[in-house]
Length: 297
Image 1 (tube, helix red, strand yellow):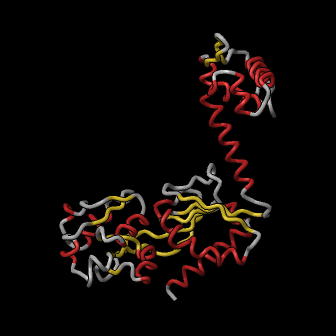
Image 2 (cartoon, one colour):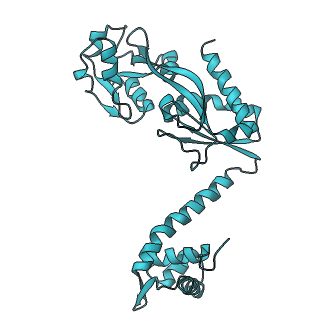
């Protein structure tokens, strides 16, 4: 239930515009309203709250302490309302939307190239996808599912194992013409992934090598950047094999070292209980499993 003192959206818009512009005239121009309408909104809001939101001097408006406190909350609140409206508009006349959180490179290099096949089976479904490196809180984030690694699982949510993560060492053919030995790898620039900085040291330990020199080399935020850097010949990359597979098939990269290294983690489908009631979630889950199985067919 809305209380008598709760501001309306037009009042908050007028308040924020006046806070930015410093005058009701400029605020009215920004909002496409009349000056009198903006002035009435401000007066009505101050009457509701029982405080002066602006200090008025020589036709200029400056925020009072109360006004500054309100602005900290009002601006983000209006932004969230805009985001909510855009989320609803994403339906675009379609009946359903599937909201997916996904690891950035997995989404760009593996999932998106395959989505056309899924959408062909459900043409009335719209996809809303966002990249997420942190665990998803399904209570506050509007996602139906997440495709992330094992470590992103959170208590109280369901999860389905998709495939184990295995790392492979790759490089451009211009840098490495034939597979190398493990000692040879450390003589080349090692491309680093900044969100998983222990990959090369962990690889060195697994190979029985000294990890102290494993952190030299250019650093990049995401695996797709690491792969692009490797393709450009900037160094050797240690990346999940599933992400490098397409580049290897094209000949853009070659395996610089035979064999892969299991990390003990896996790509996982994570979702809340209520997603199971969505028929389009079930269709996507089954389609995703089939696509994963095709990798090993």
